[in-house]
Length: 134
Ligand code: ATP
Image (cartoon, rainbow, N blue to C red; front, side, top):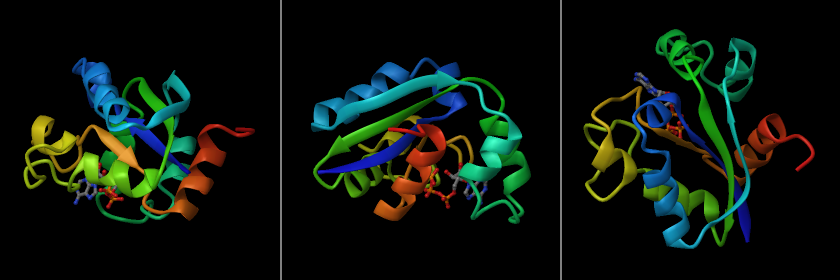
């Protein structure tokens, strides 16, 4: 079994899609190991997105992820990292396949509703940031 860090970003909370998105993860068989609604500051955004802070798209991404409450979740299950990324779909909601969360609910490359850790190593790092002590 494996754990992964998922964010239901502020667009998911604003649009009232938290329940619908969580349902998909639960229906797939993943279980919730930790969950919290919180509004983050730029410092936490920079830590989470350490690999992106120097990129052109980062300043608006930082503004977006700090723009309101988001839901941070640790999901657990067999191959949870890869399974969550498959359920999330491609980064750009305009290109993501129908049937995926982004493909069904997002028309944006930035406001794409969800984050999922991209490897087991990233998951361990991110869970340490969001849920220290878990
Ligand atoms: P995540 O890491 O959030 O699961 P991802 O791995 O599909 O998504 P990354 O390339 O790690 O995507 O980018 C992180 C986030 O930065 C994306 O989810 C998206 O919100 C934003 N982003 C990435 N590329 C762009 C871009 N070209 N323009 C605007 N926003 C972008």
